Length: 268
Image 1 (tube, one colour):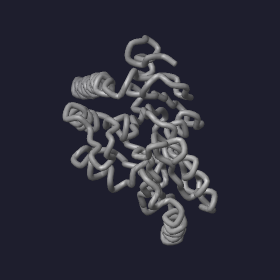
Image 2: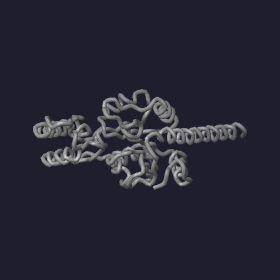
Image 3: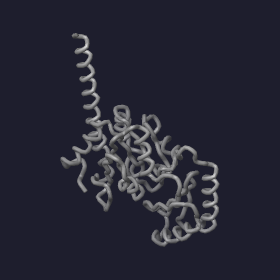
Image 4: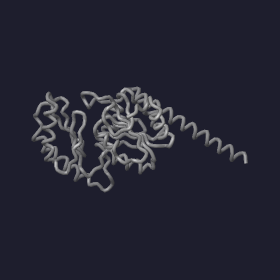
């Protein structure tokens, strides 16, 4: 892995994506927003929000999060993303999906898991409509809590289990993961390259996906399928500044080219 902001190869990769009009996509928790003890209080720093708002006006940007889509929309309100994808890639679901059927399955999982897990110290079930997240950050013995959760999830038929930081998720198996969702979004937008920045196990679904022109950046230097990394979440602002500079240069270059074409036509 190469430190994306300090190595020539990494900076060149960013230039290639932005200069080619590629998509810029980000995870939310641990990437755009610091990890916090209470997930309900997660929010980008003011500096991150300002940089992201400017970048999204200058270049196509998207978010792909494990949170419910509306939750992310509310936390990033006012920023002009081309798309916000939630529920680990499952929301919005692909055309033709029977959402009512999916929601009934998720509700059944909730009933099953509540009977087995609620009341155990430090375990909480979050219902995100199209998926469930079972949190165990507050458990005294986190390893034992995760084992208990995964055992209970064996009864969640038709679900795909996705790990995370002190959380285990279960998502309907027929809905796309983050990698599939990003691939579909790139195809819909006609993006021939894409930068994706993420920090967690679920983001590996993107890093190992067969997405043309993918530049993967993992937050934190850990074993990953991503080719590049940031040292820690604080460096997201430095990355956004670099991307904004590249995007501004691209916009200025396009404006100069357009002016030159007009001058050429007028001078005929």
